[in-house]
Image (cartoon, rainbow over all chains, first blue to last red; front, side):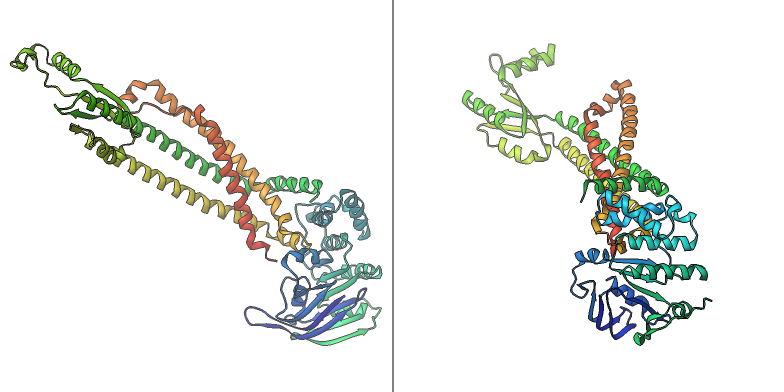
Length: 228
Length: 302
């Protein structure tokens, strides 16, 4: 579960990114966070990953109170979250298999588990044939699938997808969101940050619209069946 | 941490040294040249120190007893000199021995020189001593001056002063050279490592986002730095061995000429090779490993 209680955040240069927001996302939910540039979307992601701490108010993620969390516990918090970035952030010197296995090595998983889990998640995102390829040998869509597989490897309670379709073809964008929806159906909470309104309108669901650091809209809408 | 994971991190460190081979090679070269410069300066300084010590060993202070000195006074003086911690060697020349030496020295003129003194010995009991540490000359002389019925202490003051001056200047120069070299090396190595880590900041950033602990991130960099440091150390050691032995052969080929110039004992590399290897390895691996880890700090704040 994710909860923001009266959260405000001001950057060191004095810019107010979030103003007193309250938000709750329950386990197993799928939520889109939308908004224009500077609305505070990236700050929400940074707060969720405890890259920054709230200036005031409290943030709770997967049972951790991020206001009180010790530095040494931050890696443990992050192990409960899978992150997908707009620019994929794959390690270029590692194969697809190693990029995914890497997350499990980080958490000191047994080798036998790694050997079983990694092919499973690579298969889940449809990249079985590309397991031995390097990121530079893959298309943008395929690289984002690897990033998704990496986010899933650890079987996290929460997946944060930060503009996951920003660097890929519009057609492939739908596939990526389809995959995220599929993952959500298996019980994982998914938060997708995007500024692509077409995608949001197509898939529908819970939409949280941030405007100038505040929540302007938070409701569930129905999807349309028309892809652009 | 599991053993398999530790092995993986060590492998990652070595693998990354190869993957980033351009930066690794740059670090290797800089570290190796730095070690060579510091090593050679230290070896040259040590050799100069030995040469100066050899010259220092040749100092001689002469102590003359006066006419009233009894056999007991002479024995007490001998004991005092032999027990002094800064006196290395004591040669006693009795009055008779001194007279005999003098007669031998002046040869045929002896009869003229000692005319009217037949049956008398005007030569004093004498001690010739070698001062171990000439920087402590004054304290030693003041202890010698306490001898009963002492007439005169003849000290090679100019010799001592010059040597002390040379030693101090050499120590200051070599210290300054080593400090300057080490500082320059640290700055260059730190910049090279920073550049290497900057190129991999993305990788570090990803590690942080997937929940890697700081030690998990540091170990491969630590291993990589140590590996490059060790390679640099071994290469620098081999080059020092070759270079030093060439200089040593130059010395051995013409030992007499060098000896005239005061260069007598050059340390053979075989005597110091283990120390040099250990020194190079410790410095190389230390700078390599800690240089990497310290440069990482900035990129760990995610």
